Image 1 (cartoon, rainbow, N blue to C red):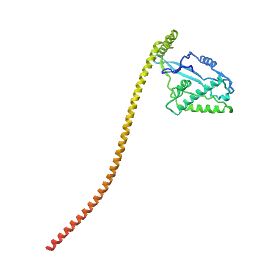
Image 2 (cartoon, rainbow, N blue to C red):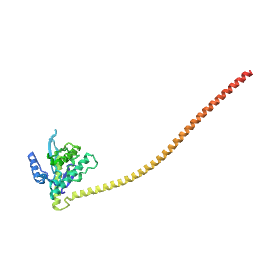
Image 3 (tube, helix red, strand yellow):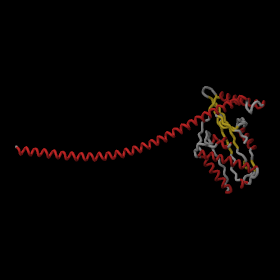
Image 4 (tube, one colour):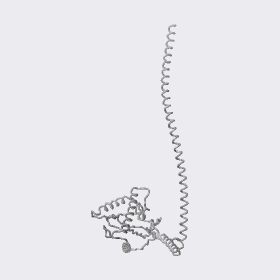
Length: 320
């Protein structure tokens, strides 16, 4: 609970206050690993004589120097995380009591949170609960982030470990379905790296002086003022966004009301259109009937004119 975890655009997610040890060879790395292994908490349970009572995270930052054709030194920086997770534990079978039981509960809780993160990533949900535990915060880049991740699942061959084996394999199978987006190790010039380290050293000196002189709350006044300004700026931005949200919401209500009004008018127009179409059909039917009557009258008129013409010709023939 005492770990303070922060997010930095350059460093990524890091734990405040951890010591960075300079290593130059494999032997140096193994020496640091051995030193950290001695400090890892283990205890005996009914299922394991050296049961891990905590998770372990070992991070290695690697610097590789390369030279450009112009003679400028470039540094390629990469990071390797070795994570050893403590296994889930059935308190009834392990016989853990008191402090061991509380440790088992914390381990199971962190693994449960990690399982929720894995499930959210596999199901591609919009919200990923990284911040629900410190373990998932530290592993954020390895779970759906920019790192390459390799999983080694350890299982037991005994039938007594059947439930744990099935649970571990299911865990690993779900984690295997996560899609990461690895990025190429960044390249920095030697000058830029030295400038970054110089700024970091200056900041740490200011914080150390502030702590020694008790002039500030674990921060020098300049940094505290910057944080206050940042907080005020963020507060103003939040207020502005809140006002814009309220305004947008009011506009949305107005648009919805206009939409409902338009929909009602459209429904009325559709009813009027349906009535007009019905009247048009009736009018067309009447027009068709009228046309048939007109044709019949015209035929009779033509027949009458023909008869009159024939009578007239007959009378002229008789008189002649």
